[in-house]
Amino acid sequence: MKIICIGLNYKSHIEELKKTIPAVPVFFLKPESALTRRNRPFFHPDFSDNIHYEVELVVRINKLGKYIQKKFAHTYYDEIGLGIDFTARDIQAEVFKNALPWEISKAFDGSAVINRFLPKNCFKDLKNINFSLFKNKQLVQQGNTSDMLFSIDEIIEYVSQFITLKIGDLIFTGTPCGVGKVEIGDELEGYIEEELMFKCRVK
Image (cartoon, rainbow, N blue to C red; front, side):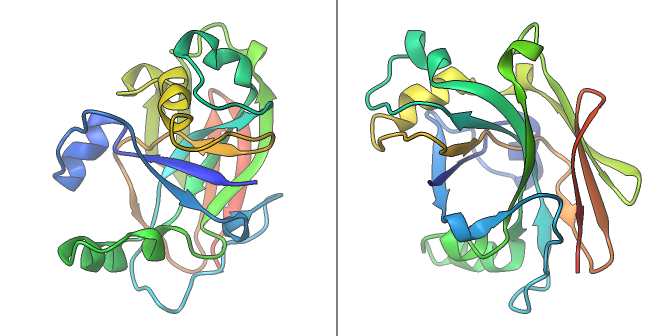
């Protein structure tokens, strides 16, 4: 099982990071050891002073696929969840400055929060799904899939040109604006529409 993460997929987030809109999906990988499941706590690592939350819709791949055409991409997933892509923003800034790979700032242990999934057929329109993140009961992020630069099906088409998708693979589809720092003691809660999808305490 692998975790595929899409970067820079919401214009609002691109603007807050002062980045350039990409022409194609930007993706990177996290290992299975990055997973934090079943509402378990996230343990703040000692190597960073600036860990940021990034809430993202997540799709779980349900069959093997390579070179998947966009028109068939919807058959490769049947569940949608919500997760956090934790980022060591201070380390990320350093590797960006030196044009180095950024996995060290993204793929560390516990950096991919995930809990439950909902059947895809629960949603009337996959291009109009609201999701949000609360930190200590205060709304900090909200997004809608209509604002994605690249849709779920476009992401699957593009990524599968390079990497074979396998059953159980997770795709984090990008974050909207509002990312920010977490501190030990914070509690994060993620929602799809009005449905609580995860709770995560920072320890």
